[in-house]
Length: 466
Image (cartoon, rainbow, N blue to C red; front, side):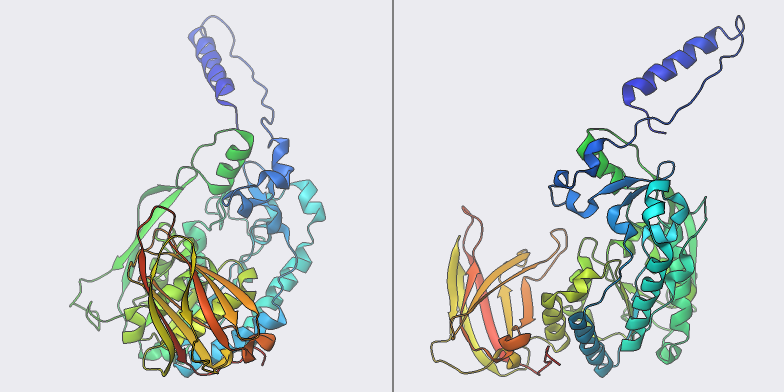
């Protein structure tokens, strides 16, 4: 039950006044009623009109103080033919590099906490269909060749004290992360690649309480729409550390890059200790490269473009992502394939050039010699001298007159290298087109010029049509 501030204060005042006369009168009797249902505006999808709010459309009240989003009740877990084909190609490239990939895709809030769904929504939610489709999706990932721990073990969970998900936030709790890490670690233990990985013991302890930043995300969304105010939601805060100091019983020093790497979203952030729990259950070091707010590809793009990956690719890559709709995004695969192949390093150059970008859109590269390479054999690397540049907005003109726009963005709070690498578009008949020119959007008005270098190189073919 959530009370408006003025009513809560009045309630406290009345209780205090009555308590002062407890010796003179009989103890008061109070009746509590459910207060403050979500305002009607939360059912209006048009009210979710900011970048933050769009991720919560639309919010639904659950039992007690639980909140859900309408997308939590979905029963379809679709992977398009295109997405499946590209995932198969991606698995093949990872396998070529000797990297085993473990996919961590947790079930939705309504699947896990069906008992917290309010009666009206529960009546319209086909739990059995949603569960069957979720399991089928995991099976499709597995059939492609990825290692897929079965997280359907957590559906319809009834943990009251340590719930899998927060009551009013989209993230799992540290206890949800802990239970997931145990299942994932058990799957990794069975991989042949794990037998050659150095071991050491880790211990996990509770160091205090964590409160979600300001307040839980779904409650924050309610407050923005309804003009209300909610408190934080708390959970235990865990820290995992090596049992012994470096140089003791561990098999390798701190200078060695771990051979197990975690790429993920905010679910793998420090607050939830998912990487820490993995280390404890694995008995091995895990390099956590998660990028909160980076979506499906954010951490993967940053890691594959890092010095750590170039120096020592992992033997096991744990890829955590809670959403699947981005698996159909062509721009994701264009970046991942290019980075896995080393960008334009040690490749034959087809075009290159430098420019000084000023505010507005401007041409920065022209295929003036009419070099007749096609998209299926070409890759582009764009590097800004200012490594703080996070957004690329580009337009490509082809010799047959067609245009393509591409926007790529890195997390604003992450240190980045100003480098954007991607294969030219190759789905459908785009594969046979030849690039004529490139336009880039310059910095904001009033900003100084930006130095940028562009390279187009010859690459290995990973045909999106296959």
